[in-house]
Image (cartoon, rainbow, N blue to C red; front, side):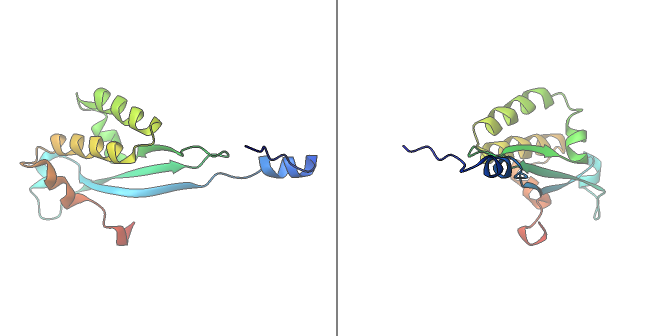
Length: 127
């Protein structure tokens, strides 16, 4: 495997000045409480996946942000879910990250079926 080196110090500095891309992708507009789920127009809190690209060829850092995350962070199951999300993020497994977050949200909202959480998922057309 051949290593590529910058031709000059200026080239090296230009390589170091690359600004990583950061994306904020809407995932869920979650009702703020189990009571809100039953309303026709529930008050919602958003959960977004933050994706931060890095200056090197590695998996980008991912995490969840938004008011919905702050609500879920107050639940008893948060610490375990947070650890699972972190481990999935480190492994580059965004599917597992989403699964843990959506399962936690479904439990918090006391949904009859966990799959009902997808009623609150943000459509790709709105993302």
